Image (tube, rainbow, N blue to C red; front, side, top):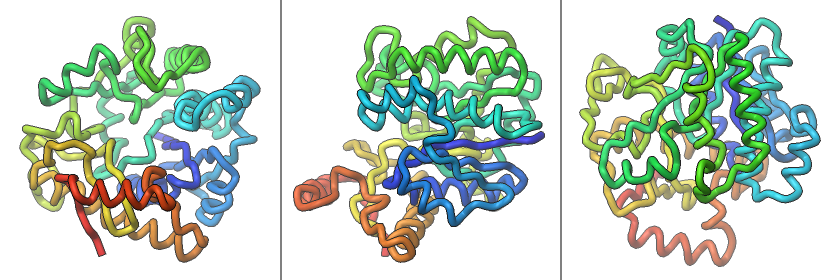
Length: 321
C-alpha cells in the first residue's frame, strides 16, 4: 500500500512539521511524506531534508490560480485551510501509484503505524475521524464546528475518493471562515456532508486515531508493552490542538483552565514537548531562525507581556530545559 502523508508548513511551523515527520518516519518508514510549503522560507529550511521518502513542495508547484486569488484576500490560517484539498489533489496527480493521500495537521505526532488503521478500511473511499467529544462542554461545540475533525482526513485513490476530494476542494474555495457561519466552519464542517454524498466512506471510531484534548478527558490512558493505550486501544495519532510554544523551553500544553490528566501529560505530551523542543533548537541553531516555532502571540516586545501573563495563569504549563 503506497501512501503519502501531507501537511502544510509556514516558517513558524517548521519545528512542528519536523517533529511530525520524524514520528511518521519512525512508525511508517516506507511511507512518503510531503512538506507543502506556504512560504519561501519554509521551503528553504526544509530543503535539507529531501530524500527518497521526503518531498518538499514549494507554493508555486501546488498553488492554482483560485488559490493565488484566495491568498491575496485571506488571513494565513484561512488560506492554509483552503489549500488542504488542493495539496492532496496535487499529491495524487504527482506521485504515480499512490493508494492513499492523507492529510495531517502539523501539530500532530504519530505514536503508531497509521497504515494499520487504514488496513481496517481497505475498501473505503474516504476515512474520517469524528471528534468523539468526551465532555459536555466540548460536545456543545459540535453544531458549530462539525461532526468530523479535519486534522486527519484520508482519501483513497479510487473514483469515489477522488470525487469526494474534488467536491471538498470546490467547497473550500467558496470559503473557509475562521468563525462558524451556518453550514461552514474552516475547511472542516464541509466534511459533514461527505458520508451522505459518496459511497464507501468510513467513519472510524478508534479512540487511538486523531486523539486530542477534546476527546482524551475521562479516558483510561496507560502505558502497555512500550505503547500508549487509550481505553485499551493503541494510540496511533495525537492532535496537540491548543498547545502554545511560549519559548523554546516553555510550553502551555492546553490553553484552558481545565488541567490535562497526569497520565496524558506524562505519556503523550512529555514525548511531544521533548521532540518539539529539540526541533526548535535545531532550527534556531542551524538556520538562524530563533523565533521559528514560537507562537506569534509571544514574539516581540508585546509578546513578552503575553508570555508573562500566560506563565502566570496556565494550569498546563511545562518548562523543559
